[in-house]
Amino acid sequence: MLEINIKTDCGNAPKREFLKNFRIAMAKANQELLLNGVTDDIVWNVVGGKLTEGKDSYSKELKKVLSNDTKVLTIHQILSHGKEGAINGTIETETGDVIEFSEFYIFQGAKGDKIKSMITYLIKV
Image (tube, rainbow, N blue to C red):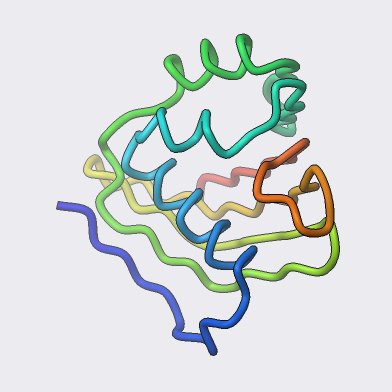
């Protein structure tokens, strides 16, 4: 079972809640939620990895990279302001790997609930 560790906040920030749920969906390999949370012209840049453009390509890439081997997800910070958001934390896998991550997001609009672009940094420690 996935263990999730997140600092409690005021709970009055819809985009931060969205990003928290989006990152948890990634850890749980919930492709449906991940697809519903992005625009049709999504751009996903995994730095040092692959640049994915468009929802169809994003869906195919998710099928390749998602797995259910996340044992612990720790979210250190979630930030949002206007059309932008960011999250960072640690992933511990069932095989003992530890990965530090940060992601930067641009939403479709200041009040949008869909991600237009994201940049992911992953560092295995």
